[in-house]
Image (cartoon, rainbow, N blue to C red; front, side):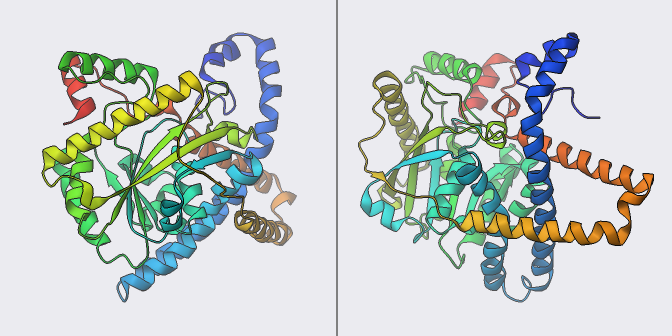
Length: 409
């Protein structure tokens, strides 16, 4: 059953949509432009994604047992043929402007070294912003992340992440600790520079979660956050402890969205609505970090206190960073990939429909309509899975245990 919430309706309009016929007509008219974009983009994305997934399956079965190094190099190229479609959405369809602030030395190193990437989780598309910067640095196909296990089951995109060796956690430390250690060991012989992204807050920022974090911080005498959540340090400590021998750097990223604009979302991107995202990156040598687990955890907490101060200053005075604003341009590679996929898929459909007489019978028409409905449903699943409102909730039973889980010291 398709959820009552429309693809193009904010949640606060749902009751209006369901209760008033005139409102339903007006809002349906508003939804048409987004649907007109989502259907063709979705057809190309899903069919090309299934082709990519099939190529990944074949290379995983045939190549990986023979040469893991060769498999990884081929998978990097194959995965980028799918992920570049999302870069195209940001760059060419919606025209999202990402302002990157980073010193010149770090900018030159990006994409040429292994790095652990930590970031505040401010918007629904933080991961896409990371992909965009990775693409500019030449390591999109080797950009990895530590994510919740549910993402692995997302059609097309989640499957491609699994074949690309993303880390998927169950949010139970007894199991996740083993998963992380095994994953880190697998990365020791990774044949090309990789970025491993870790959102240390563990969930996306919302005002409700901020209130819980502030209450906990006040009860423990900690600095009270205003623009970030308290970091969960277990995963970070494990990452540093296991990878400091072969990963030379930590990229400390801070994301901000101007207050005078709506936060970017996948739905707004499909609608072609532009926005600005500011990203600061500071590079820290892995060797700078303390040796002990407590010291590493405290280092992470201090970094988030600094992030909070940076964001507070930005929202109060409009000054974001003292780092150099870098020109990352808008490469045509993603545009070329989307054009190639569109031509290939379009030609295949053009040849298949007459050959199969698909539209010459009611069964064929019904099949075509069902396929388009499934495309919309899959795209809706992908959009909804990225929304902050649907991110990991803070279970408040009992309250003290909830707050303890929020920081997971």
